[in-house]
Length: 302
Image (cartoon, rainbow, N blue to C red):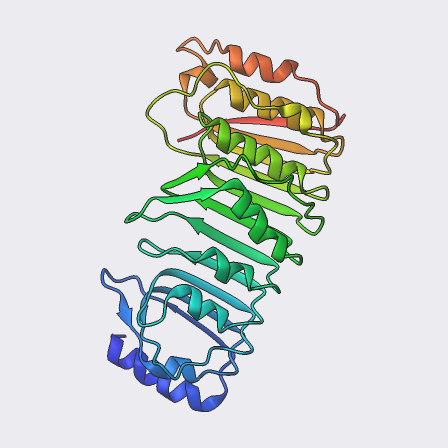
């Protein structure tokens, strides 16, 4: 089905009270959608992939939209942040783009969000943001139960003037993508965020791809980590650094209800030499576990 046929269907469906719409374009070029798509005022779910949106000046938003998933979507005329603020009842937002970031102010206005995938940085531009700014935005999202932060071409800066972050009791699932364990600032932020979520049940951390091996010492204060409610933890693409070891040690020691921690790696520092000797794997087995049923699943990546 080509672009013309798809847009004809969109025009037809606007007249029939459509509430859910998914368009996934697997072609090389973005699919330019007709402006009739903005006539779906009854839409509750919208998912678009590899498309171009041409909102006109009369676009007033989707007042009933609850779920929005935008992957590789270009929005013309209106900035992405302005587009989102015209969907005031959003509860779920997944956003990924090669070219555009969402303004932090726009995200903070989506006070009904329960699930958020927030991409920080793009191919075109390096995003610079402070720890405190992320915490401030989260402070407005009091209903948030699932948060995914993607540090993609992003430089996280420490703000010496920031105050202690507030608690986020509703957050149950946290995904952190692109965590650079060689950065004390980024690791400290991760620890602080975990500590600020007293009811967190699931934690997944995907490390950043780095050419240089992370330093062998750590200046991060892991002693701040008190008792956690975690049931499941995943650490992916680790390299056996000191910060990674300390993170795993702290999570095991502070999670009395933990069921399993999955660790994936493809590094000689983790799995050892050709004979299978590994100091890191040996250390993992000796770490104290607050939970008597906690399992450590160490998996070699392929």
